[in-house]
Image (cartoon, rainbow, N blue to C red; front, side, top):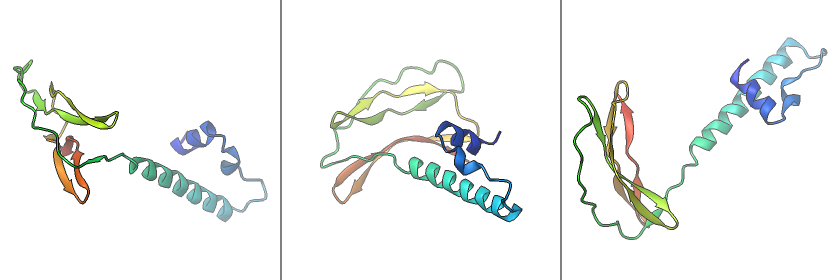
Amino acid sequence: MPAYLHFIKEHGLNHLARCSHTCTPKVKSMKKYILHFVVLLSVVSLVSCAPSYVVRERPREVVYFRPPAPARGYVWVSGDWVWNRGNYQWREGHWDRPHRRSNWVDGHWQNTRGGYRWVPGHWSRY
């Protein structure tokens, strides 16, 4: 069963997937495309809703001890600033296995009109 039909069933939208026997193939096809568009639009809008918090001053630089790698081939995933209860708080880095065909990109502070916001680190495909 296609993913969009699972979505419809889970959210009680079965009436969107049904078409009576009087529907022409063209109407059925149109309903299918509209349904695909609505689901795609919903997913895209949810993904773009990641919160971003701005502070006037960047927190002080954190100095910490990086432990030795647990095994050969591991990549250091740098620490991150996470928003918690109105403040950015430091979360320690860790060693991780490299993701397939990806490099780790460290997070950084970005200067914005109202102050600074943290851009989290992430795996970037190459």
